[in-house]
Image (tube, rainbow, N blue to C red):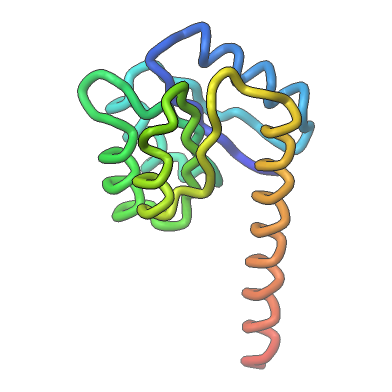
Length: 136
């Protein structure tokens, strides 16, 4: 099960993303949805989700700065940006964001991102299992 936290200052965009995630995969559990990025950051630190879907433009802190801060405190969390503006895609990817999706979201594109996330989590999990087994 992939645990996700969603962050977008637009409530309708947040609900739309949540509905799309529920349509695309039964393996995704939305454990939090926030319009306030600061409250969301606290939740991410406390709950340690597998992935955070976040908008770039938000009041108080932009998504790129939020990613910098989260990666320093919760390094294993993956960040997927969801934005109507593509100008920051390269900046986000340079910070090692997992993905950058453009609004309006497309089901097919969201499915590709989730499949890749699950695949990479599966590989990471089997790598740690093999490392532990090798150490025995």
